[in-house]
Structure formats: structure tokens, C-alpha cells
Image (cartoon, rainbow, N blue to C red; front, side, top):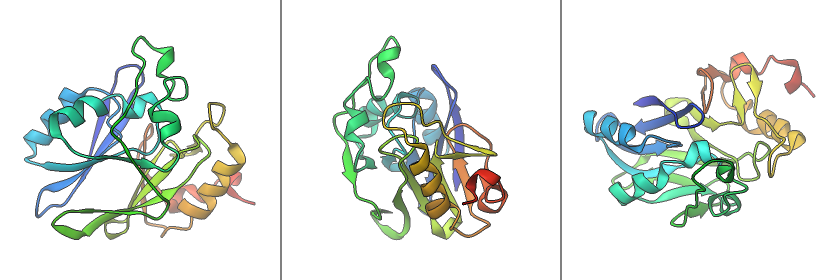
Length: 210
């Protein structure tokens, strides 16, 4: 099961729940704002969230993490460079808002890490490093359900900005070509700020051709 919820405080952002249909356990991805809305959705669907997964550390993707973690007492995972953003309101851009944001209780995972449900290890995602939009950008690939949670790396018909802290357009395009567009064509790409798309639909754009 994949659920999408648009959450907004300063910027509308797509948060996702990826859960097992049988056990109703799963993961919450990029809770950027509106913790109460997300918690209500979790309760309404009868879900148990085992971890929060962050695709990168910009404030519009991490804004509800502290409130979610306080309520559910679950781990939060980021890529190995995530500390640059989680603990720095300048880099996570929240210093530009009225509420500078710091995350403290985060586990940083290496490229290739597998994140599984406790009692159903076959239900899992694979973390793929994909810097460029930010230094800490990652994709969570759910092979069994042919889906990838891509954050702000790639959108429907475009790709992420690279003019903020840790941005690198060359690295981003290289990562999209080698880590996203090499996934099976039918893979659903679920981004932070656009409608869903697929690998097949995005690989045709000229900016991805070498």
C-alpha cells in the first residue's frame, strides 16, 4: 500500500506512507509538516509506522519529524550526509522561516542499506545515495512494489534545484541517469513536489542524455 498526503506549512510537499497490506506495518516518508494530519491518517487506516525515512534534509521534508517521533517513538533514518542538514537550520533552510529546525535523534545510513519491517523482513526498501539536489539526497527503492521514493531528485518532466547548500547539478544528473533511470521502466517515481511518473516517461528527456 502506498498512500500520499500533501502537507503544507510553507511549501506543499508530498509525504508518503509505504505499508504492508497484510500486517498494516510500514514506513512514513518525508513528513514535512502537519504532524496531526499525518497521525490522523495513520490512525484512520489502522497502520503501525515503524520508522520515518527522509529523502533529504530540507525543512519542507523534515518539518513534522520531531512531533511524529515524540508521538510514535520510532527511529528516523537519513543518508550518511544527513547530519549536515538535520542539525543545521542554515543548510536545511529553516533559518529562513520563523521556526529554525534541528533534528537530533536520527540514524544515518550508508548507501545500499536495507530497511525492513521488524517481523516481515521481505517488506523493505533499499537506500540509494543520490546527491545533487542536496549533499545528503537519497532514494528509497521498493523493488517488490516497483516504486521509488525519489524526494526532490527528479520530478515529472524535470529535476531538482541545485543552487542551494550542497547542490551539484552535474552530480544530480549523473545520479539520476545511473541510479534512477536504470531501474525497470515501469518503476513508479514518487517525488516531493510533482505528480507520480515512471522511469520510462522520464528517461526520454534530452537533459538526461549524455
